[in-house]
Length: 307
View 1: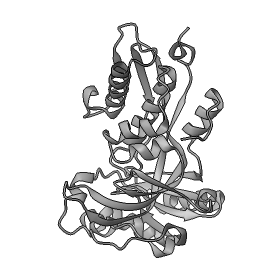
View 2: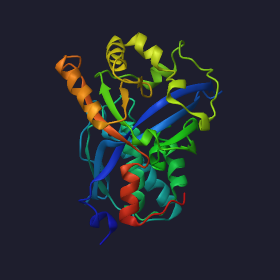
View 3: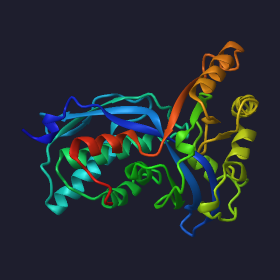
View 4: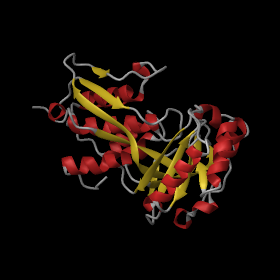
């Protein structure tokens, strides 16, 4: 029995991330932006299942509104891995049918598409028995999106460049915190924000060893707040209760708490005061030093930290 068949009923996490800060330190000649960020992994996200496909094709069984299957990063990730493994003469390749339980909003700044692509690459690398290293998968993932290598790496980490250079977090204080995450039901185009003339592009680099949340910011936040009044409105209310910020290019914003109970109390209070309307979604998640996907991969396949 193939590994794909053996684990076809397994549920694989596809966790969210937060950018606890996002500094844009420059822009390269090819148009890509040089960044510094702290990617905080959460214990909340989507989940995927992979099973053999009798048609010997890569098939996404869960439809996405307004996204063709051929344009979905899940399908693109599976196709990219299949193509590379075929060219390298590796793996026990066969068709795969993919299901996803989608809870993360699209265009929310939580890495929804990128984490789905990363889970697809990491899991199928094992189920197809390709045996690529995380570094090799990260290189493949970079062609799909700048955040994909972060999720393949699977650790709360500082990132630099276009997101491909990782630096360990010196302490795990952030991973012991709880985050109230609010999605205003606005879809914000990353491309639009990064191409906007008013986006700052010359923030001085920081020394990661001296990182402090209060001394950092999200360079996209002011622009997004000016363009999207609902983001500004919700952020103003979150700031009343705890240090708060936007993640990525938005639209999600988050508040930081030391205790889960406090975060849940604020969530209920915002609902009671009708600050969160019927078109606004929110959840509380715990920060984790290691993504749930990486933890599960280690447990099932006895993988060690060697990449």
